[in-house]
Image (cartoon, rainbow, N blue to C red; front, side):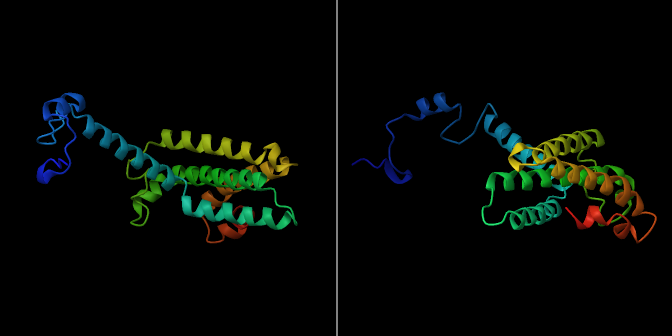
Length: 195
């Protein structure tokens, strides 16, 4: 059996044929066209964008809000849990929370740039524009409310209404009051206490 020497098994393909087929110089591993580097760059860019969206969404906080709503949904289900409805509830709640968190960061871009703890967030650091953040907020908010209003949730209008009310309370009451009073959470408590 021919093992092709110390480099490993022989494929029966000459280096010249392999180079022509792959566009790479197989003897050096070089990629003269740069296709490999461009592919890595696109993957890296996609991961950076994903991280920006997760940061704008305050993904861990939004996940806790969605888990709380999901827990309430399951507890109210009785013996037969509608897992499709639960999925719509969880995803919809996460998206509405992500939207509100993004708008919160748009509104606080300037003050976030002044604090050490928040200056590296995507908006104050310049990694994303307010326009792109607003687009994400609009898409995630609309998709979240649509999921909460989905027929899979049965009488779903109240779920969507609660999602919209909480979004408004978080964005229009809680966020502006943070700069005025330490009592903002109590004044906007439905938005911070009831997902």
